Image 1: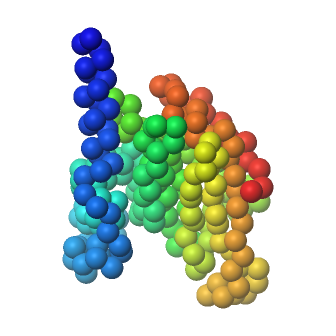
Image 2: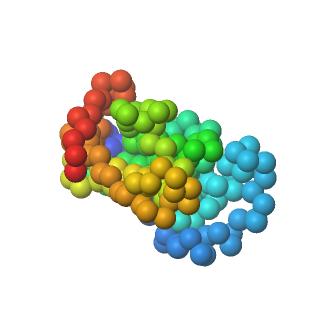
Length: 198
């Protein structure tokens, strides 16, 4: 009985993290942070970023800060998307780094009271830097559909297209990535993905 009660309390606490307030659009949330976020990617900048994403996702600022730590964010987040898969709360955390806008993706999972980085997107073969670098093209996008995680990345078909006017989108699917994260308490080193064209 005691175990059941503890499980119920933990379940309610996790659910409440995902439903603190109503998520708001970018236009409303950007007004809640100062125009100058502070030195690029410093503590003040990340604090303001946490306030912005808390507003966008309808969760407390401290929750976003926990996600930033779990994702080991050094530069900036371009997307922080809470998702529920098979009853498990996960977070898709897209990071952008460097002048070439090289993106990475972490899937975060809650283990007890701590958020952990349960899965990192593997580097892409054929890219000079091994990451999803888009330059001036749109940011990386991530979504789940059942147990499949899909990543959309943009590039220009014209190597001289500095402003990315001719966008080409590519999909990479990672089958069998999400459900194992929902069912396991093991560390992230056990999770592997099988990339396939989506």
